Amino acid sequence: MPTNITFTNIDIKFTLLHKKELRSWLNLCARHEGKFLEEIAYNFCSDDFLLKMNKQYLNKDYYTDVITFDYCEELRKHKLRGDIFISIERVKENAMEYGVSMQVELLRVMAHGILHLCGYTDKSKKTVAQMSRAENRCLRRFYRKPL
Image 1 (cartoon, one colour):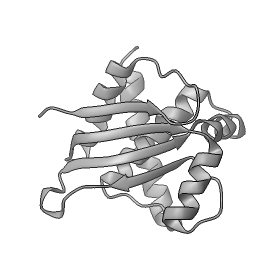
Image 2 (spheres, one colour; image 1 turned 45 degrees about the horizontal axis):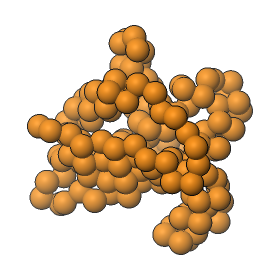
Image 3 (cartoon, one colour; image 1 turned 90 degrees about the horizontal axis):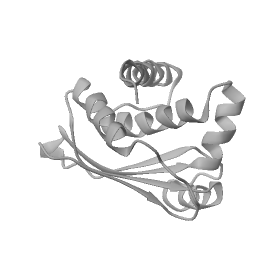
Image 4 (cartoon, one colour; image 1 turned 120 degrees about the vertical axis):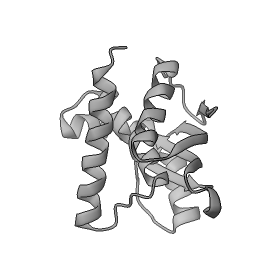
């Protein structure tokens, strides 16, 4: 099944390396959940851009690292389509806060967006823990394959 995963910078300068490997890994993460990536757009942006989106679309007034818009059709829920917006500034700050590399934190957030499309939520302690375990499974899959 062909996949269309795009990577775009909105209002920042950012260089994403290893796009081919990332596409393969993201597909692997989705397949593990019984899903297929049909059309996914990763949009890298600033904190301010994502804050405006958070206010406008989600009525939330705080910085976040990722917002996912799910365009999956109900009858084709196994084929994932969506836009994933990631604040690179927030990813960098979170990496420092959690004591991990920028790459690890970026991978975690990229997987987080895909997992939302797979049906995971993070609205309660229980679902946050489930999401975290799924993110860790995705990260383990990535690091089994050298870049």
